[in-house]
Image (cartoon, rainbow, N blue to C red; front, top):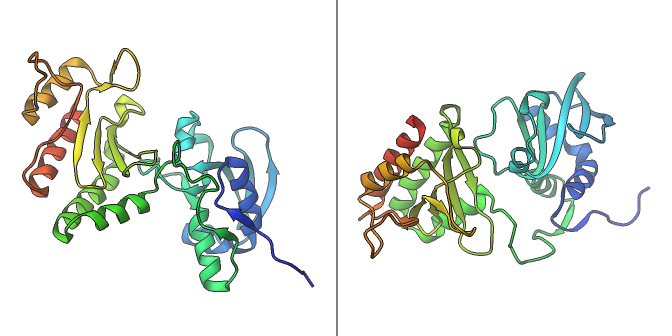
Length: 273
């Protein structure tokens, strides 16, 4: 008989810890596998030491898996989705990922195992290091903060808009939650511009657009100049004291309905560029 308790003191903070957690949760993976229509049997064929990280045999089928702390790291690492079948991650934050990739979120499985079997795999459901610098918010955290900060009517309008964006990934819309210890944000971009998210919505209900990356010196353009000017004029955006375009600004709106309309117009310009 097994004695003692085992698991993790904190949430995983690296890809290697995700791999370890996956191993600990393998007896319960059937729950997630069946959701994806793969069957419930899961065996490790091999760890390759290269991309993709692992080959599983799931229900008699070969499944190539890449492990990531966050699903968006798959894209950030430049992996080819055509050469992989699934991502096993701690949290899923790549909402415009190719539909062919199956996503297995271990944080959901951890909660399920605790609720269904009474097994506490992670003692403290937080990162070991509480400073969120470099840690990406999950979409659930973003939506939770949005609901907490807004009136219900405003929250419903923005939630419906975000749901529409998630469904538009096959049309070229890219979404990415922000990092850091400030208020959660959701970035919006177009696939044709790569990993660039000039639009954002904050969990405080405000939205903005950046025409330049002001975190580098000198600031670098995020969009072609003619496209940036077209969006700026459409938004009736503010000018600098010298009468020039601002490098970024909040999108002015009297209510959530007006804000969503302006966001939709901006996204259409990005997609049609």
